[in-house]
Length: 444
Ligand SMILES: *Cc1c(COP(=O)(O)O)cnc(C)c1O
Image (cartoon, rainbow, N blue to C red; front, top):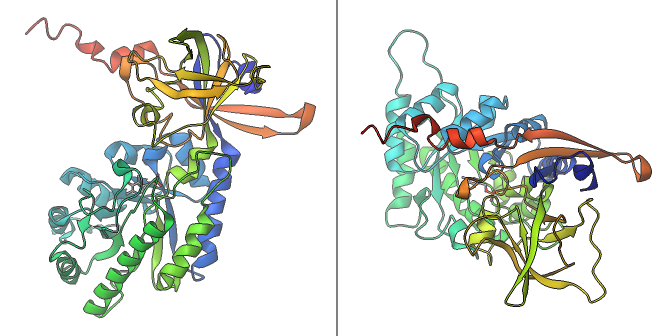
């Protein structure tokens, strides 16, 4: 924090930034590899694909690619980011609930893996993979699969529970006739070689996720038995590992989950199936920090309120669903030094954002050292689904994001920053708000 102030990443004119710990991201990637290497049979093809929506930032995707991690994409924009980061097609998986025919065609032409969501999408794939008769060799498509919803139930956050009975994702496996339909769909399509399930996310116990993977594995076994060969050669088990937002501890970790999967679904790792994972939040949440200046400190109805520059525009989930997404807040002085608690102990305060609605609070009645104008607040564990998921309310600019690395120690500590995303300019805000069409309505 001190280095961010000294190197002027944050100050009166740049009152909010996102910081990403490069070593932390690398360490999470290494832990992911190590955990699954512990359980898979030697030689098993494994693709760990980062769910791009968790941090849709090209330099982050490149950093992860350097660590051997691919991308799970769910829109043309996310696919474009993965390609801009130089991620190879064979390391990209396309999952999305509303892919258009053009998007499916592009994916097949690029040779990236696609998981169809439903019978109608599978029918579109039928038309696209039919051997082409035109000039030139037909490109073999990348691996194609089907997403299923094992309907094992939800976690504590409804909006993030993907495997409830009525979830919108995949083919609902326990619905009458669905399982038979899926088995038959594979029998008729020798090119359909993967099953995909993503049972998450935040708020879901590991046992629930493992039960979803088990149901998916059992379906793959049934399909392969029915067709009499190993037609399904890869299982895509999705992401969804929850993150601990209450302390610095990483719990659960990838090894907890990998070992639980080995116990719950031993056949998954015996070498017959390739493995794809799609973790997002757990790869990056703990490596991100939002740092924001306190502009004013006021009081209303006896409640001290710090008005800061971090609110719903970047902590959208925390502001709108505070019970599900509480964040730790730390208080620093204007130099970036942790603020000591005053002689009377911590002061219960609201930490508010800059948006013009009353609920724009990232913490309510939170005991903290008393905040003053010019102080800084840090929102911890905000690497995933915060800085990169901007909400354009009040036309507030997207803040700059910087990666950092620390070397040396004591007096010789050196902190180096690199830009990940430039702060949005006012010209860019005008441009994305119809600036080029300024007179269009007056002329109608
Ligand atoms: C969002 C998503 C993920 C990643 O979920 P996390 O909870 O961030 O790990 C993986 N797969 C699919 C299909 C998703 O929609």
